Length: 136
Ligand SMILES: [Zn+2]
Image 1: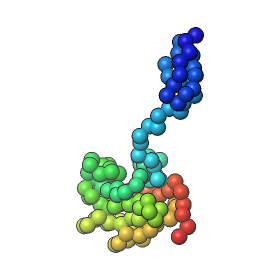
Image 2: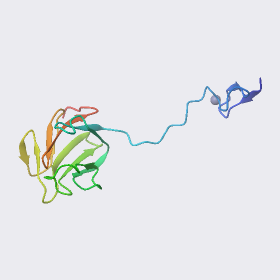
Image 3: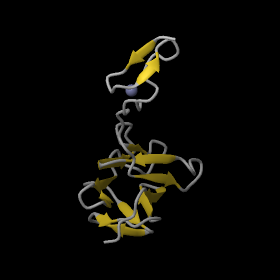
């Protein structure tokens, strides 16, 4: 037994623990998820993409945040999905020259998404699942 004292003033047995067992682990830095997109069609049905704060580009390019590389109908940058932390709202619309649809209806400007919406970019359909749902 080797009594040690951590910077927070806890006593612990230094022969058993490398660090104070009473202090919480340091918070890992990570980009919190705010929602998900899940592919609806084979062969990638169930494949999910994490959403976070800010802008996501959907497209066939490997640089896209949401890379639909298998979709021959998707342009390199087809559509944009944004999450605004201030308003808590997700919006989805076409990138310049691209196309986008929500629940099968083409959209030409960004529209506010609702939980469970079906988004289309290229020929790919994705289910939108937010972490939280704020009523407007
Ligand atoms: Zn401690």
